[in-house]
Amino acid sequence: MARESFLLRTDPKILNALRRWAEDDLRSTNGQVDFILRKALRDAGRLPGKEKKSAKGRKSADDE
Image (cartoon, rainbow, N blue to C red; front, top):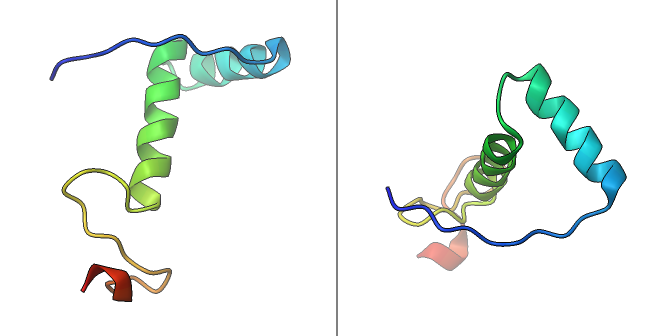
């Protein structure tokens, strides 16, 4: 899988909290950001090739 990098500007307090969270989960800060983004995208049905589902787990009307 090809990786692409980009610059992220954030509040130092957010970055420090993210670093602590990553350390607790035995991940790098970059790995933690990737993990969080993937989960949010999956939960929102926004990952490519994934079927978007409603809160009840059924296919939403805009997918039909």
